[in-house]
Image (cartoon, rainbow, N blue to C red):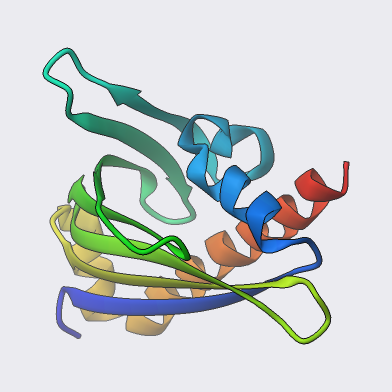
Length: 149
C-alpha cells in the first residue's frame, strides 16, 4: 500500500447547516466533542496568517501531531493544508439533506510522513483504514451529541 492516501467520510448530522458549520469551523473546540482529539487550536499570528494544530489519538500509532493552515474556500466548504505527521489537505463539504439536517463530507488526501504509519500502511493497510473509520465514527457521534446539547 502506498503512503499516499485518500479518505472520504460522510456524516449525517440532524442539525441546520449553519450550526454544523459553526462547530466545525471552531477548531479550538474540537477536543470538547471529538474524543479522538487530544488538543486543538487555531490562531491568528502577528503576521496576519492563520494557522493551528491538532493532536489526534490514533489507535495504533499513539498521537498524530498535525499543523493546519486554512485555505480559502466556498461558503459550504472548510479546507486546510495539513503538515506534521501527515502532509496534504483536508476539507469539509456541507450541504442540507432532505430531512433538513446536514450532510458533511470529509475528504482527505495525505502522505504519511511518520515511520510507524508508513509501516502500518505497508503491512496492514486494512487496519489503517479501520482505525481511520473509528476516529471518524467517534467524531460524528461526538458532533451529534454536542449539537444536541
